[in-house]
Amino acid sequence: MYRFRQLWKFSTLQFHKGVGEHQNVSQNVVLRGVTLKGRYNDLPNMLFFPEACDPVENWIPFFSDPSNKILDYRNVHILSPRNFGTSDRHYSFDVEDLANDVVRYMYYNKITMATLAGHGFGAKVALAAGCYHPERTTGVFCIDYSPMDQRFHEAFTEFRGFIKKLSGINTKEMTKSQIESFLKENIECVKWRSIFSDNLIKLPSGQWDWKFALKFLNDNISFNKADSLAFWPVKAGLYTGRAHFAFPEFSRWVHLGTNTLPMLKVCPQVRGFGHDVHSVQGDNNTLNHWIYEFKDQSFVFASRFTKFLSMYDGVHLLLKDRTEVGKEFVPSIIYSKKDPNHVYSDYSPAHYYHNWRFNNVYKNLDNQNK
Image (cartoon, rainbow, N blue to C red; front, side):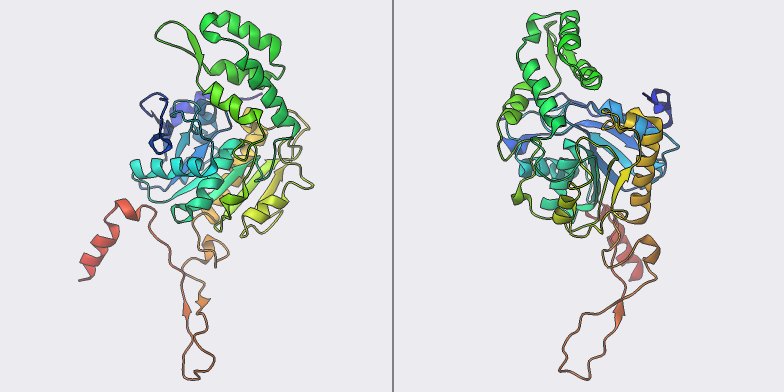
């Protein structure tokens, strides 16, 4: 396994202030995490959501690695979805509530449009936000996820079993060493054991608790409900913008033979395998879901990231890629076949400044033209 902890120094980190609070109203949920400032001024923003229970800190080395070059194109906000990390708690895991959390974060942080990306359950959050709020989304990038019913996949049933075991103990009556011993004896997967250990937090009372809403999470995954973490509901609709899916070749979450079809169904602009759907070659390792743990694999995923951000993200759908912006023109829609005098012309598809809502760039431009 591989980690780049020493590469933190290459980026400007800003952890968001505040701790997760229980909210009675879903609209009051606030997302928190960490912001990595890109290497240039006035860069667009990307919001990234980790897998369920996975701390945002685990993704900082991946995005801050200078060889991955992601920070050359975007400011990166690594955010915990609701009920995880330092984000607020609420019982609902409804897909629309998850999507609204994202847009609310963008509004509070004065982000007009953003790239939405995620890993596992985090990819579900990103895609849901794109479906419900396409006008705020320039593109969606999903790692090891497919919008389908994964409730009976082996990987998810394993996770569900681990959460059930955690629900059977009272951490507030245990010491940290006792909790660690319980994890070692009951959580067979070394990676999930490490994640749960990283989620331990000491309360002001001296007792120990989890950094995620264990009761809400256990209730959600214990029943086959429509708002289950592993289920993609039809009501979310379609995402009509640019999207990219990447997953390990021997993924336990995305089975190459059949699980790529829902990607094309939910995202009609996806052109298919080899274009917007990619499997990354690698060993048949049960831990390949955690791409940042393996140097070679993480570099390939980062390359797919940078290719999407630099060539496709935010580019008008009528154009092939960014190389055609300002060069290729699109024929006008036919006005009327009965009007022989109508002149049909070409036009260049419009592209907006990424933060037009919270910036005076167009207003200043109008003043200069007067």
